[in-house]
Image (cartoon, rainbow, N blue to C red; front, side):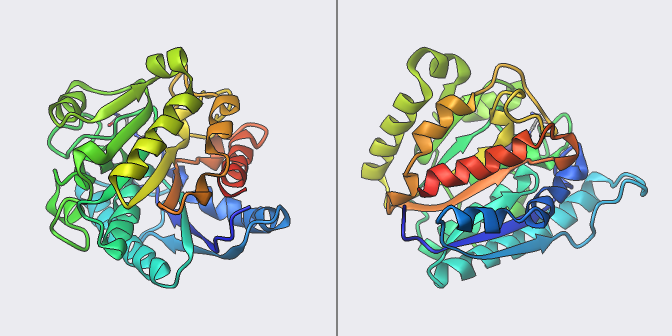
Length: 300
Ligand SMILES: NC(=[NH2+])NCCC[C@H](N)C(=O)O
Ligand SMILES: [Mn+2]
């Protein structure tokens, strides 16, 4: 068990997803006492707080225009980034639970800025999707399909320049796991930057745990801090049905959980994020249970 003091932060954002109910994911986890359950298993959970959107989602109201969503997402990510920076200054380990994956811009901007690790931070991105669109290339205009491009410094300036005008992560410090769905413009950007992708095919051939451990070992030599963000849709829908953009042939928790075991003992791990839980789509609480299991493995 790690000694780390953990702060859970619910990021109640759904405007970035096509199904906005991801906004309700972290509130559901708090209502079901995720913090108590983790504490009962020995984790040192200090707090469970929530950040809310300026305007909450309501199914009864008309759909928002992209510019209105953008406004709420920019505001949210600015506050999220500040919260992360503040948490890190008080020496707690942040675990951000979404919320759609647009929250990654605020989370990792806050972490990189707090550590002043601009050239020196690696991010492991576990996802079915590349999330590397900009507003100019996205067909769906869903902003949760865009956080990677913005963390690398592309796209809408207010999102790319959260807390600081510099790009937050260098392409050589960015690693994908689990990818199996993308559009041409995003793969073109990712390839042009030389970003390493461990897609589902390579993972199935070599094993998630082997590849993941190799990556952690390599990154630990290259940078002084790294982060882990898990989009739950990286998992096979049979393990994580409660997501808004499911993709077949995903990762299985029986392969991923062992690889995460004890990860928080690595002192270079700066924060963890778990995104895209949509409680209205969960079946038999499988996705909720998976979130619990992921955190237990990482911190035990
Ligand atoms: N975080 C996510 N679930 N992203 C899904 C993105 C799907 C698709 N590539 C899009 O941009 O619309
Ligand atoms: Mn994602």
